[in-house]
Length: 125
Image 1 (cartoon, one colour):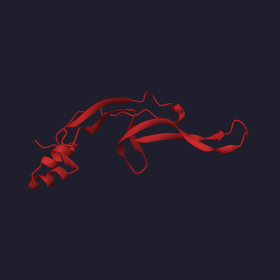
Image 2 (tube, helix red, strand yellow):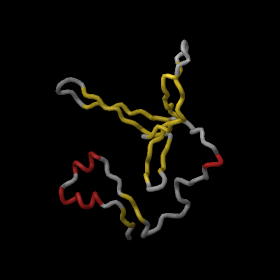
Image 3 (spheres, one colour):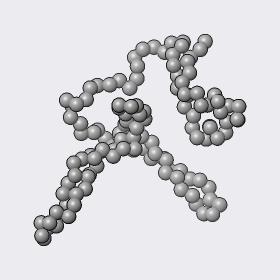
């Protein structure tokens, strides 16, 4: 999760006009889906699960919440359109990424751990 911060705003005492300090306000929030050396792919919409425990021996409860921060106020001169999905057809030999949830990883047998750790594989016939 990233908070995109604006320039510091001065806080002034209304009676003395003394500058008390400054704060940076949030322009927007995004959640990163991929991080690279020189750029990050992020979204203003995501699903969040808030978990809480009930009682000493309570069950685990989770509240699913859809977050939508809306459109970011960006300078259109500083961005270029980008496609999140390729228009090319899927072919044998294409690279794939294996995504595993924490629950699936915990349930995996020890001999499965090496397979689960493989970040990229290829589609085979």
